[in-house]
Image (tube, rainbow, N blue to C red):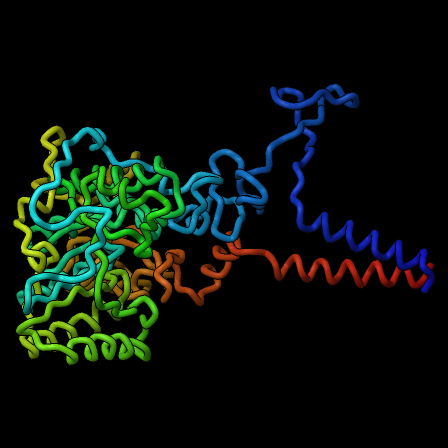
Length: 476
């Protein structure tokens, strides 16, 4: 092969590779009545229009590529789109497109509510990593409420145990927690009526050390308003997502200005790594080793878990309750384990009518319902569909493809009947959200492919281009 052929080969390969990696705007022929676009010198009925890329095409976004077209979301892999895989937080890039994090709760903002530092428990920037009352154990659950939270509340009630729920407002594609047409507000009310403590885990689970001060305000104030809409007040306790509130970011002092206690933990169950029947024993072992190392007479513990994980709710938590009881520990809220009076846990907002006395109607709502539309009845025997809903049923929130109510992935994932219950997102072991589909289903793979990186496709295209260029060059 001559030098000239090599140069041609190199030029063709680079050009094809560049073309496959860089998305271009599209020029399309449109009817003359279309008001936008450049004039076209050909047929009087047609002209050439220069358009922004349509929302449903895979245009790249992020720090290297910039913003998505208006109305579309930038996925964690850097592609624009409108599916839940693109728009769900915290993966959706809030600086490069629309995300569900940009939604807001109803009612007036909470920023003008006075925020005095009351009591003896230190406020931010100090980070609370342990309890102070010997013999107590504070179980805390992050990221909910979720489809498993109702089961967890029943379990805690059976053991007469109190816990603290660090709730998020809109993460994992679940919708706003204060939306009366979703099951979350009722679960939050049950937390309060069950004697549990509610704390903030931010609006959409963004890393508070990596966002701007204005975005941090959004993360805390929106969650405050959503919780206020449900219980009439908002928490003074919070846990930063990923336990991240670095001093150099200004996060700690910002949270102090907002009047928050920062709560971390001294036992991490690592349940987010072990959310399967084969792995959850690892989390049990972590818990057991810690408690067996000390005496309950002079020790207390602050535990972190996640009520978005099935194994945490249906396996790990009951084990922890049994072990802690056998070893002489008393399960309490974070406020109680710090000896902080209950009146210091929340800040009241009397300007907005609380909906805690309102009966939530979870039946499907349509703007245009047919005259013969009948409101579904709550399932009494665990079956669903055919005008029976799982909302309000003791068997679970989701109506599976087998027309049975439940809270497992098989009920709430792919095939779930949205007209007869709640259909949830799946949550993988790393704690991030997946679509509301079974992870191995064909539909789940199709939806994820819209938001995931196309490196394999690009790689195959580049390899094919290289082979074609080589073939042409050899024949010159």
